[in-house]
Image 1 (cartoon, rainbow, N blue to C red):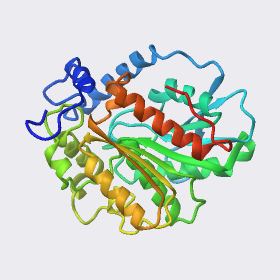
Image 2 (image 1 turned 90 degrees about the vertical axis):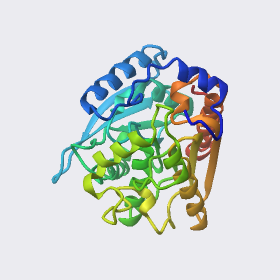
Image 3 (image 1 turned 45 degrees about the horizontal axis):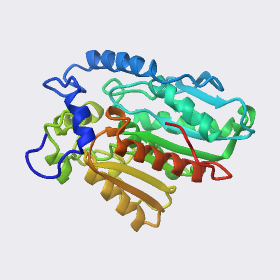
Image 4 (image 1 turned 60 degrees about the horizontal axis):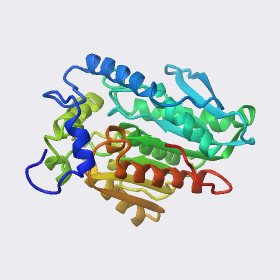
Length: 330
């Protein structure tokens, strides 16, 4: 961990000490296939600890495209909620290199039941096999398909929001830009959890967050190299590759951003929030002291993690549901 600067929160530090962190961190991108297998095994272990939500059904959908592979979706919907259902389009974490849609299904089912909304988890294509903007194109295809087919699915096309975590937060942000620039219906919001937005890695937090072992500078550089190849850090990167490259942020939906003080993505998140607000976008921003990347996943019972979940769950409740009910998923 850093020798100077803010200290890690005590509960988060204890969780960090208990983690099996290798020489290349928790997410070793020097061996992507092995780390993908490890992530899948970890997801299965975590899923076994989360009680099943029997009131929420799960359907697998393949969205066809003429010029690209189908986009797999995981549709979660509460059985007892009145239709048409609002929809949360979810993009999983993993630095756009790791992970899969079903990894979040256990807790997304609880969220679906608590909010009375459908959740569509997008199994977007990963780098390096599919470079950017392939994942954002998958997100755009999924969003348009949901809106076009909402009536047949019992969903509300006027209440669709975007959300994503880490690399998935970056894809949600890039998807929102594609939606705006192609003239599609504006989402209700974009909820970005410690999002991966900027390939340039020039901020103070990008340079200074090293040695924690979760998602530090070295890991982030490898991830962006996988996503963009030789384009990383050059002028050949579009906003659909890395959302922070957008110079015009006007017309984007209301935005929630939450990030930790000791997250490599801290400064790019703060900058994106400030620029969104300067372009007239409503922004709700939360900075968590002493928190490293993905602190809510690695220390889920800590006070900071519980505060974060409560905050973004209630953002969803205020923006996604008609009655503004309070979400209680955990």
